[in-house]
Length: 292
Length: 238
Image (cartoon, rainbow over all chains, first blue to last red; front, side, top):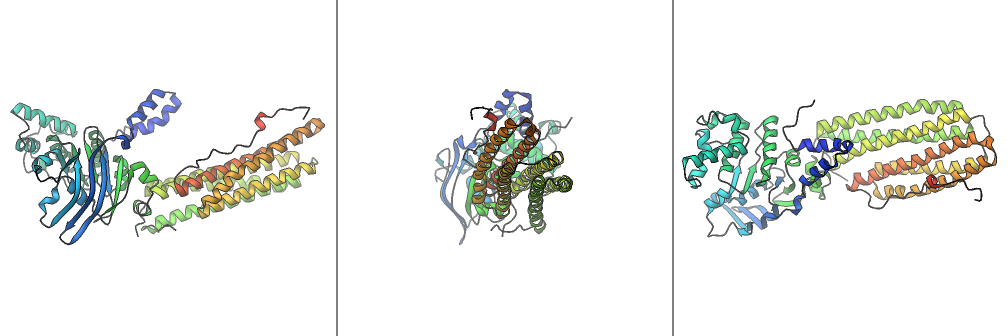
């Protein structure tokens, strides 16, 4: 007997073939309905004509990109192509850089997030972010998760907070591993666990959108697979945008992919299409390792 | 023309895949031509050579498949490269089948070499094999040149092979009805004709794969089907 995949979504893909012989048409139909066409999902985030300047230097040129809800959208492209800059526009992280100037419109659920009357702190509670290197606070595992809910005043009692900490850790697939050491330091966990702790921390403020900037690039393949499995589970409840340098990862985890180059979106579409039959030659050259 | 890979050894591997398919294709063409030649001449020695040569084609298939699997494991190919490797596996298996069909014609030479072959019949068979071979040559060129127009022409051209097959089928039936002593020979020839018709089908598969390789989409037209023999009955009044 072969052990099951860490990433569950790979199992049905393989089973699907076997089912044909089994004349188990039900399973087949079920497997197909779970792969709902992401194009049919409603749009969570719209971006219109986004230009970003760092001082004199323009980093993004007229980005128009729609991100569907409850799905994973990956942003790929060579270093310096603007994918992380774009990601940081979505939760207004670029605001903290003095020389950075953003123009254009980004809307979440139809509301302009650059509206001056909007509370940025509240916006960032709705948009969680996970970074390349796991960066737990130098606090206990419990306090890492409880920090956000406390400052945003999301819970009213200690019991409620305990519950939120637990449910966040459960969603991030970390609960079983840490439930007996919640008072221990977050930095004492392994790299992969720390990253899942950061994801739990992001989930704790009940965001709608989770932004991930190369969340697996500092992790080994097993920890990466665990995170990818987690991303796949999370997409039922969250809209996820992930920046990744690994084309294979983009192909594995996302339903849509956008290819950035020199500050522009060169091509955007269904992930399967981008990786089997990209329409733009630049995209093809990049994903096949021909970039000249 | 596509840009080259940053990793040159990857580029070399893709090129070697192409050249192996070209070699395998060339070998397959020669084998079918020799098999048919042996059939026309009743040349047993040459037929035996063909049977031995088919093993070389099988070796190519194994080699190309192995290389493709290794490349998938090591390179994790994407887009055009992924299509090239998948298509290489499929084309190789079609070529291997074509080789088998050629070998099958050669085997029949061993059974019927001593019988006199009706000239008019062999004439029809010859034009069928000429067409099948030129289609095979064109599709291999289309693959080497990544030429979808050429591939489409081959794909559409299969109907003509089917048409010749239909008329040969009728002719062979007529011979058999005329004189039961012809039945042995004609049955073998009928199988040879069927083999040529199948070679045409495999060639059409290759044409479809060339189209997919270059454009990433399947041919949208309905495949022309001209082999009607499954619905033909012996009708004395014909």
